[in-house]
Amino acid sequence: MLKRLEIKNFAIIDRLALEFGGGLNVFTGETGAGKSIIIEAIGFLLGERANSELIRTGASQAEVTGVFCVCALPKKLAADYGLKGPDFSVKRQLDPGGKTRGFFEGRPVTAAFLSGLGDALVDFHGQNEHQSLMKPEVQRALLDRYGRLEDDCAAYGSVFEERRRCFERMDSVSLSEEEKKRSLELYRFQVSEIESAALKVGEEEELQALYPRLANAQRLFTLSGRAYELLASGEAPAVPALEKALKEAGELAALDGTAEPIKESLSQALILLRDAGETLYRYSKGLDTDPEALDECLSRLDKIAVLKKKYGGSAAAALAYAAELKDRITGLEDSALDKKEISARLEKAEALLLKLAEALHARRLAAAKKLSAAVLREISRLGFKEVKFAAAVEAEEYRFTYHGMDSVEFMFSANPGYPLKPLKFTASGGEMSRVMLGLKTVLAASDNIPVLIFDEVDAGVGSTVGRLLGEKLFRLARTKQLFCVTHMPQIAAFSDAHFYVEKAVKNGTSAITVARLDPAQSAGEIARLLGGKLKSSELGLKHALELIKESRAVKESGPRDL
Image 1 (cartoon, helix red, strand yellow):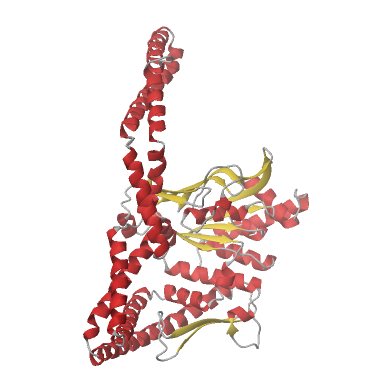
Image 2: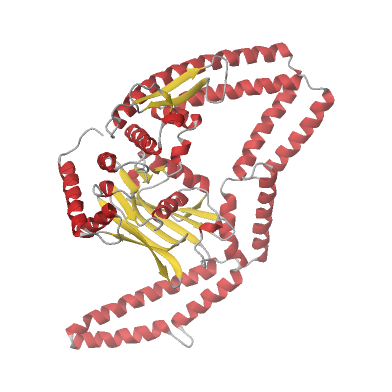
């Protein structure tokens, strides 16, 4: 789970340090107070795209740090990352140029690494996910995730790629000798250019982190050397002076026992100063002041930039393109093979592809049947009088795509007597919120993602359904850590931890503050949500306490099916 979150100069957040526990963590506050910015900061931390507009006005850099429990990761993943302690830290920074730097346990890492880590740790349900849920490709991905069809999809995708290569080789056979020669020359030159650069994924980020040290090496050497000298000699001999003060304090404590803490404080200060001095000495000796190292760093960064621009925008893309070019070269070099042999390979690939596609279709049908029943069971408890839901899977034989022959469509009806129709055409905003929560609940039960984030899952629902959502979120939070931004008192009443977000003007600039509410403060905030006023009335507070009492009864009733 996420145990601690520190946010500095992010959007309109000046500085925040928040501690979290397990269960349901709820954020409330006035509209526009900045609740969703906290969720956005977590997304940024875990690899989401960012631009310089996220840096707080007047700041030179935005930074988000998170401390997670190692127990949140699958054991294999924790072992792969080399994690042995109870916690691990993740940090990401953003500069005015739009460049980001990521760190995992203090080590530089790429945004792709953070994104992969985020996929294993957190499942986001943002305010725009209602729209993405309407896309058939998203619905197919959700179905495959629920059915654990990753291996089946990978096996199919591998053969699909083999079939594509066969088509390319067939095209190569049809090329003239002059065309083959020109293509081979171009492909070999491009492969040589990429391979000679010896690109490494993550190298650019490491060089960008190193560059400021090399560019300012002489200044850093001077500053660290001066600071070291000031600790032990010169105009302000800090260490010798402190040693003398400690000796005097020792005699003082011998005469008066109440002065012992003074002696101990001076002793600790002396230890810290000596440690700082040694650290400064090692730091200055470790600085590389060689101008050639700076030139090499800049040259390498320029080389990477050129290749990125030519071959896909990243080192990983350039390396993938080189691998693709090698396949093309092989195809052209092997074009001496006659069409009959290539046709035989193609026929074999298509036969296997059809077999795998049909097997994938059968597994998707089985998964769709289970998913439909599970989602229907969840959403039927969320205030629908009569509801229908089904994941429809249809296959068009020999229509091969990278994901199989199937089209997937979520079908929905909330009105008695009306047939199932595509979800995107029939569900209102409130109905979509409930369907999404039902899907998230079902998926949460089938995967190992430990943290779920809901940004205004209550959009478009009323108070009765809001209470049902609150209970659903609370029960889901018995097995997962949940973060929920909400305007509904019925949901806030079920919180394990209640945070109040407020926007105020600080030094002439807007800034966000976040306070964890105690039970009495939480009741007051719930009363405010009920009345929509800045301050709760006595009647509102009475109603809030009734809501909390009802939620407490649910909590004390013990576990129940989600």
